[in-house]
Image 1: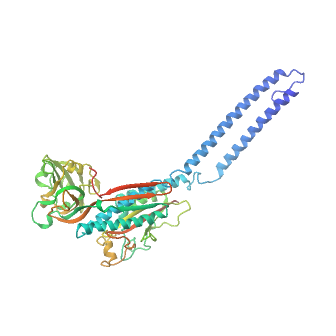
Image 2 (image 1 turned 90 degrees about the horizontal axis):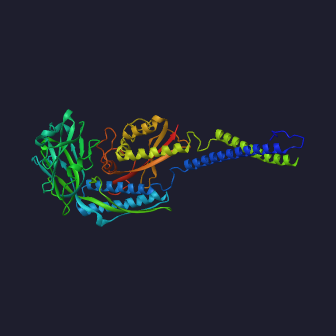
Image 3 (image 1 turned 135 degrees about the horizontal axis):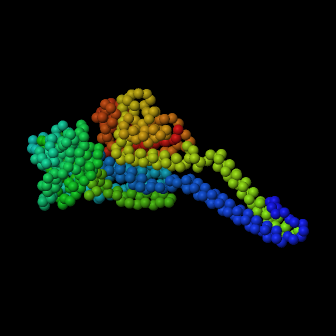
Length: 323
Length: 202
């Protein structure tokens, strides 16, 4: 650094010496300030790099939930697929589900072994509850009667889908639906009834209305007509669209057991599918085809990696409403 | 002259510090400006890879939840053994298949200049592979996402003209043709199809 204030040669230095000190202090302050700023910038850069480099690549990030979802999905499809295969009796149905769960266990163990995880899935045979898989045409398979019992003495229902052919639905409105439209009735025998009407409403849209305890039906949703429109009562959808409140208002407050029936089936063509858990025994009375089926099953699931140990018991009942 | 010399030394020390900081700052700036690392802003930025992986995973989840993914996997012509309605090759090359899953792929990736391949692994140990979409060889910065879809024996194909053909009918020979996956599951389960999406920035 250059000597900013020249030294005088006359020997009187003290005045200039004090001035030099001030200059040095100023420069020192600047150097310290710049150093601090540089340090902050460097630290910030390295923290940011570390953050980005390690973002979202945690090894076991949600893997246990992935295993759980895979096991539940396959068990659900297994139960429904087994039911659709129409096993001759309940023990045959339960055996098929047990065998399928054992196969799932082997598959998951192989699939997760290469990721360093150990899985174990076990079905509990005593947890498999017998039910009825009810299917048929809306017109009760041609008995000729306009009213049909779908299921008597029901404790729980899942996968209740009514597929209707819009061309055959009665054209009416909410006010006259009670007198003209096809409907599904839930009745618990203690003055609680829920009626779900399906008809062609405004602009020929397939419309669903719900009436409780004999009150006037209220429209809950509607959808444009298609070849076949599926009214998923337990899933709460109409066609491809969500239909909030369809199940909650149709059977949410019902006591058990309840009876499910369809009336005025002359005003609709289509098919009905549902799986029910009988309140007593292992089958329900129905005018449709009620085949022996598995209603639900519990699986014990274990997943273990070097860092994680996960154990849970899951009840699998695909298409069961939350309420 | 002793006092001025002392002051000189202190000033030189400070000057040296200042010079060192200047040199380090210059070097840092030069490195930042030239070197491309995985963390630099570029098409191979790790942050971009993480985002693409998240989008691919979420796309698979939503498509699986609304049934589009299963429908796309079953869009198979068993007689010509192709996904593409008898055109050659048997897989798609310019975008996703013409259904909900393909539309989701095109919207999420294709329209944003991001290429994707979709492969399906199947068989008893998931050792066999069938290609659904192939847009070429992925770059070194490609990311993958997988989702397993379980199909049952009574699942219907979704290819035009084959909607009434079930996987069971194909495997037991009552319908003509062949499905790409063999019946590897027991009971009502046909097979588990592991869908793998490979995504990379063009």
